[in-house]
Image 1: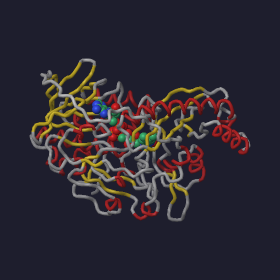
Image 2: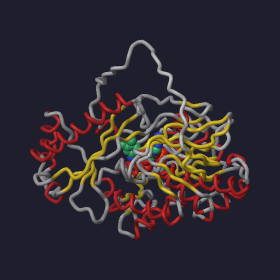
Image 3: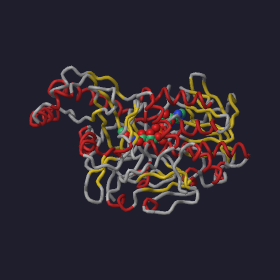
Image 4: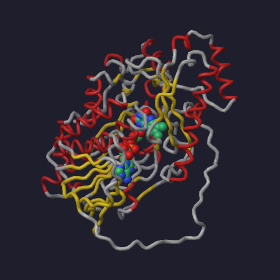
Length: 480
Ligand SMILES: Cc1cc2nc3c(=O)[nH]c(=O)nc-3n(C[C@H](O)[C@H](O)[C@H](O)COP(=O)(O)OP(=O)(O)OC[C@H]3O[C@@H](n4cnc5c(N)ncnc54)[C@H](O)[C@@H]3O)c2cc1C
């Protein structure tokens, strides 16, 4: 199978050797925690854990549809990786034929940001175009793998992908949550679900207020890493193919004050020489251009670091420290050697270390490679994804369907998963666990949770026609 972004990742990987020192004890020991009474501080309809792309879509949709909803987030802002991780490109909203597939909550978010001059994307009339100006513009930004694909005739085609301003993005999500009536509990970690038998009843949190309990009729895991899956008695899969896109940490930084006109005016040999010097001194000269219209002189640097242990604190500590050093060191070398970077400064490093894969639920439907080649919708289709990243397979199957059952555990009540921990094998996750996909999962899970609460049934049992109605009202694009 073709690899996502083939030829791109190896180009700007941060060198990562196995230097993580693990100071764990060699012999297994344990501590029995004393029994304790924990205050119950909320009893609501829906609790959404994690305010990333999946979580905001889930919480806002549940609240809009009448459910009393609390959204719990460990950091002080919403958006998850899409804002705090600075991975602010929302790709694959359409296919190479110019057809738009991801609408719903994701499109609403982009529209609202566009209205605030905080999103940009190729104009609609250029989706699917081979127009040289559009193709060149996106290739020049080093974002070909997000915006440009090849068609059957091997021509380069522009697809509909958007880029957003993460700071306005955080604010807009908070505005949307407020408008919907979602209660936000920020700076609060969910440490475990409350499970009775086969039913999830709520969550335990830790914050500056200490340990607290919150109860709900439906809990939705939107932690990205499937944190609740560690304690919910259900099947979980963690396999990732080494070297694949999901087996990577990411660390992003932004430089500003870059004179790109000066950089562009250089002889390519001058750029090559400067890049060689930077690499010889242990840095990287690779960067992407911000495509936001109001951000002149801003460049983004995405570093990717292979890892199969993206939830392990020792590895996260090592990567955060090393990637941060590498980012600053590379900028110092760019400033020293690269024409155009003389007056640049480091504007921002991502507050959140980028994780892209890990724990996944094995739900009522387990999506696999075969499902990517399926041309028929499921009877419970909640989203259609443009399939642009699998080379010839994508040309043969330019879209793929997602069933609601991929968010529903096999044998647990009161619980859904609506983030990149959805039910899929590593091959399927490799292509379909990005921001727009997680927003679609959240949109569907939030709608299902609200219906379940209103009807007094389990979220996995909601009638599909009612779920579909809410999704269509929210702008989702679904099969006829
Ligand atoms: C380097 C890199 C580049 C990427 N580039 C892109 C890109 O350009 N475009 C794209 O679409 N996708 C990209 N992705 C993938 C994308 O970031 C994720 O697929 C997407 O963010 C997943 O959304 P999510 O809601 O599942 O999880 P997340 O975005 O990780 O959000 C999870 C949220 O839950 C919170 N949380 C986690 N655990 C807890 C807890 N226990 N208690 C409380 N809160 C908790 C987190 O703080 C976070 O806010 C990239 C990923 C990486 C690593």
